[in-house]
Amino acid sequence: QVQLVESGGGLVQAGGSLRLSCAASERTFSSYNMGWFRQAPGKEREFVGSISSTGRFTTYAGFVKGRFAISRDNAKNTVYLQMNSLEPEDTAVYYCAALIHGSYDYWGQGTQVTVSS
Image (cartoon, rainbow, N blue to C red):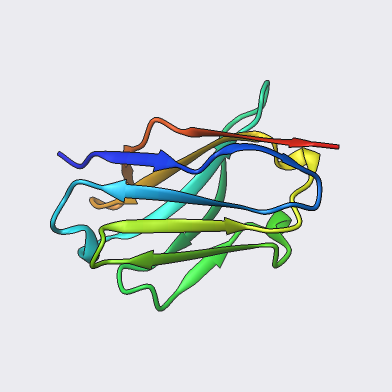
C-alpha cells in the first residue's frame, strides 16, 4: 500500500510561486512514475504533469506553458511541483498520484492552492 502526502499549498497572489511536495511511504518509490493532477471547484480533475521513475522525463499539460516544473528526489521519496507565474485560474486542489500498475492507483489527500488576483 502506497501512501502519499502532499504539502506546500496555500494562498498566493497572482504572479507568485509555490512549491508543492508529495512524500511517499514506499521504499520502492524510485521504481514508478508520478503524476500531479488538480481539481478546481465545479470542474473535473485534470492532469498537470508527470515524471518518470528516474526523473529523466517529464510531461506537462498544455496550460502549464512552461510555468510549472516537476522534479523528484528518490533518496527522500519525494516528488515536487514548482509553480511559477501563478494565475487565479490555477486555484484548485492539487493531488499527486503514483503510476504503478498501468494506471494512477494511489493518490494523496490533496493540498489547496488559492491564487488571488
